[in-house]
Length: 289
Image 1: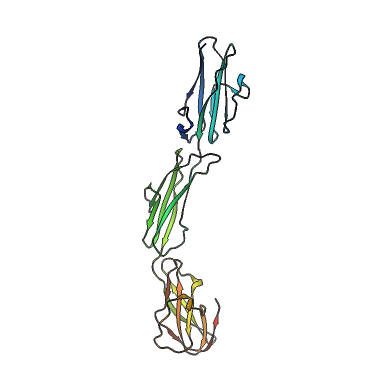
Image 2: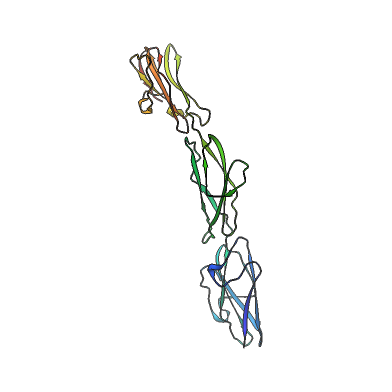
């Protein structure tokens, strides 16, 4: 007696090797089982589907579903087992096939924090395919520079122009799921801010202050600080070390003092006043930030 059970696939290619199976990103995946028996004829067809690869095999259809139309919609690796029984009770050997479904988009991240930087940088893409328990895995990454640019395949992009440049990027997994395009602003500022010493008067008193202006990243207000010389020193050159500016951002004086200012912008560029400025007054004391 000759008896066969053929699996006819409507949406995926059926192969015998798990490693040769393709991943698919549409659900459900449909298959029909078409059994033939040349003598007594087919009595029933049985099947089971799981993701643990241990449903059966059991004879006489125990633990199996009966039918010839199967719908598989669970993400991950699905194992299908099936066999048919003829009208005189002969059972076919159990056959098995694998369905791989990945319906989840991959997720792309970059190594760039989004903060202002003061030197050229290279932004690198990383991809994760988060499906649980099994995923097809990341396949390709795409990116480009500019708000309306067309994406090209790649994993990194270099930036060396001052200002704000838009990075656009996405990834695709092996199953063909395309992530939505993401945008990230890359901010570069190579120019030092303008720093100077100012004076403010109040109720007959006078303060020396540190002032800062920056056109790109903006001044880091918490970095404003002064260097004060209690001895009049005409032509005093201001230090180029921020650690020497330890007199706070405001200094109250009541005698002539030589004062320098320092500050940095949000990209980390430090700047110093070119030459000490004399601020009149007398004995002074530092006022904290």
